[in-house]
Image (cartoon, rainbow, N blue to C red; front, side, top):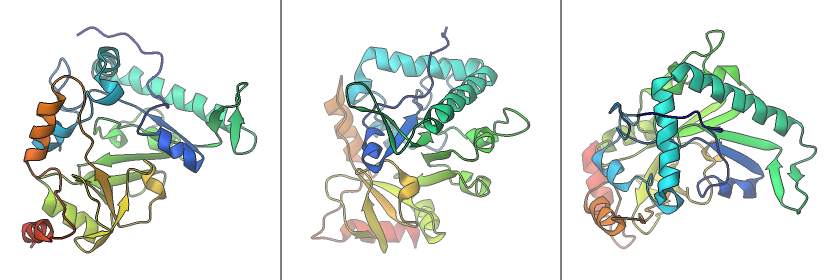
Length: 276
């Protein structure tokens, strides 16, 4: 598939990251096409389950529009075809971001119409709809993207438990493990090791689950600000766009979404059996 070099790899104004603005932090995020949705059939979400695929927001909300999806697919083709220049462009964009935020006087920069253009503080999420192991790519001076920008806060969600030990020495990269219907045991192991785990609930978020505190992960995407070793509760987002109803039925039919009921402990007992 042909591709063009996009003007920007990172973006800001979107539903996932705009919530962080109430914390006084501008968030930059990169959206690629997930799973094997590329011309080479390469899986960019290596540990994703079928339930994750069914519930993926790649084609939902504003992303349901053809132009938005084509933009993500174009970036993905660029990454797969010319990773070296893709990563160099990423470095260049982050250098520009750092300069712009360093120039902000006070906590925020106000535009001519009175709106906040950017906050002094910022964070970057590279895997908006992918799960790429960016720490393994050396870009300059034998350093990866996180090592090149040690003063920049990066964060991501991942289903790849092997990544946590690999980035343990990176103080500026925060990972949250993501539960699915196929990794309940690994999710429990990650919790017992002191990591936080994101879990999707159908309607109701408990205050405590499997013996761990549950926080509302929908209030903000800034996981690096969370207290450590918690369950990040996320409510299932109904998929919109073409085929949304059928996709929702499929996503809710399995165990990817936790059907928690505060009047019962059935699901908790089932999860405990899985990890016993």
